[in-house]
Length: 237
Image 1 (spheres, one colour):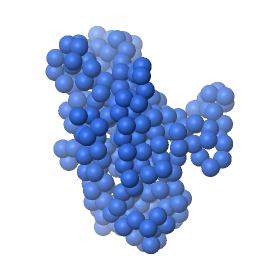
Image 2 (image 1 turned 135 degrees about the horizontal axis):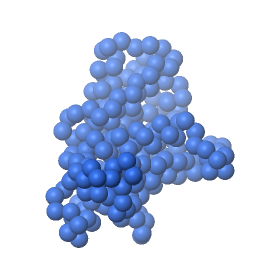
Image 3 (image 1 turned 90 degrees about the vertical axis):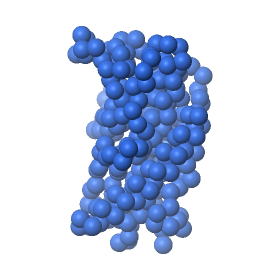
């Protein structure tokens, strides 16, 4: 029995509120259960120096957690003067995931930055950030297409992410904090709407797993991402 009482293949409730902030070109508040992440997309008519002259743009991300996103207050990383290794790893993952579905040449010489701020954490913050970032990116690009700044859509597919794990010997979908902190194995999958895999992170924590265990986690991830894809489309229509 899962602590939440959910079935092994059952997602937490998914909520997506587009246009959540006024000023950003794209914004969304996304929720996976009690996890809440605010994502904004900002368009800048400039590119990193190392891309100059290549005729393409860039999609990148920044990630952070508010001090009371968790059970106890965490210090702001800005106050420490540096980002943690975890933060850097997650924001690179988010950037890679969004670039996997974006034709950077069609984007033109501009940069879109996805800022992902965790308001409340109950497991799956990176997967919620990726799933919400696609919505924010989609809204921002829609604005470029509407204004005529772009004539061809650079976003080729949807991308979504979900966590899975082996909890008390059973593969389960969409781990919350109680499961994540006690899982034998923990995995994050980033999947595209065309069936391709952008990233798979699977780690044995309490116990190792076999090939069939990994495939069962992937099958669960496909179920979960399918539900996220549906919620994303409803949010941007």
